[in-house]
Length: 366
Image (cartoon, rainbow, N blue to C red; front, side, top):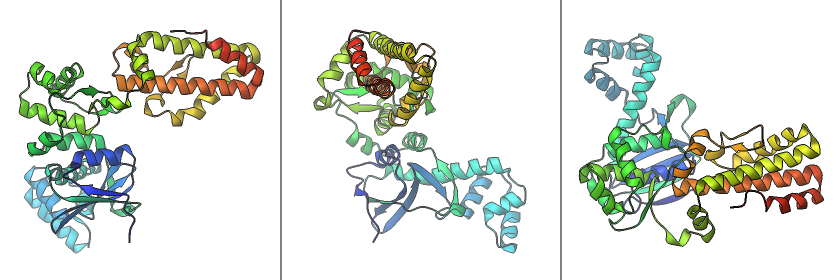
């Protein structure tokens, strides 16, 4: 019997949020969806939906190409004859006959595969279970869907507004908006960007509806997409620690400047003691800690004066960051400072570490 990593009901966890959970945790395996006697399976590779031909209907795909006038019906017939005579798939026949270029063919396959799954977003009943490790063999894999983009596309096409009503926060419930690292990768439409702008300045959904010029029907769809992707969430007062609340109450720009000054001071200190070797010491320290800091810090680089540039776009808008993103920025900088101090200890000894820590308490004070 195969191991079940997690299971549950779509009554409790809607399909788009289930997808996001799998993607966020970079799970690989098979998701089984069961409703009555029907069953549907989706495969995942590190959180991304695998485009595979085990559940892919060649004939339906060919019919869709004719309907969309990508190929003529005569060409579809030629394709079917070639496939039968050569014991080949219709996909291979399309390529062998030169009816569609490989680049376009693969885009059409991914688009067709995704469209076959959009109906799952409207499921309000059914059970699910995730079996880790199950994978599609290489020759059955066509590619991967970017799960966060797939979630957005699927919610856009939803017609079951009951699901949205059930899972969106109550209108007077306090909400918060964050800017996850993948936000800029989402191809938001103009009205969705507008809704996000209004939402960012709203304390709850009632405030959003009062200020938004979009109708409630379409607004709910956008809000549900944001909620499913973790862009909007309910404020959990119990998780707000005193430290992060106090940090955010201060001027974000000053906090950024404080961290810059501390990093620059450490670099100057090491340079004074080790000369040109200082750059190698700090650079190595940054590279070692990079994987553990999360997506926000993957583009960070060491500047000539010892400051750490996390991401140019983030740092130029530090005064306007959402609280969730700002907390991640602060947490990352704190870990960088700890790592740099440990690097000093390894390179120069305990005495230098003690002296550095005492001096850092006076540098970049808020």
